[in-house]
Length: 144
Ligand code: SF4
Image 1 (tube, rainbow, N blue to C red):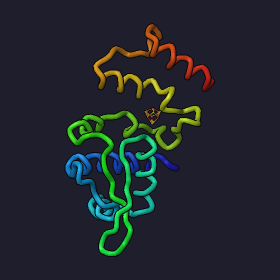
Image 2: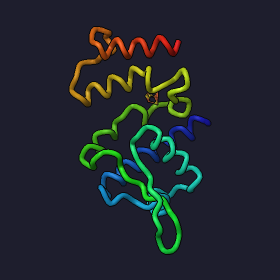
Image 3: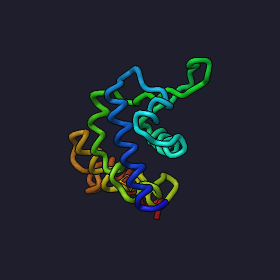
Image 4: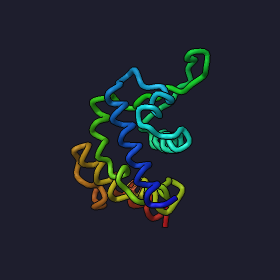
């Protein structure tokens, strides 16, 4: 996947988060999302599957006008979901290679950890002084 594809996918992720924040608990039908974002279903689906793996969204099948389609819901409340728009993953050039089974992984990512700690209003655990830091550090070592 090229750099342009990664940028395009990241902007689709951000736009999806914004749409879901607007829609709230009602969610949005997948075909409606493609129309709103003007993306092709194949590309949009790849992005949604990645967002689903990261637990940003959930998808549920529903019968709509006689056809089975997916409705997409935010996994967090709308007021919380707007706070993840600045998640480093959305602007990250490593995003297409990042997976919990790879060397580049959300488990060992310092940028993501720092962002999550800021979000939670806690000090950065990567300084390895807290029990969480030790768990985080040992996960990092296992990955090496
Ligand atoms: S977890 Fe880290 S490396 Fe992976 S996409 Fe997010 S910011 Fe990039």
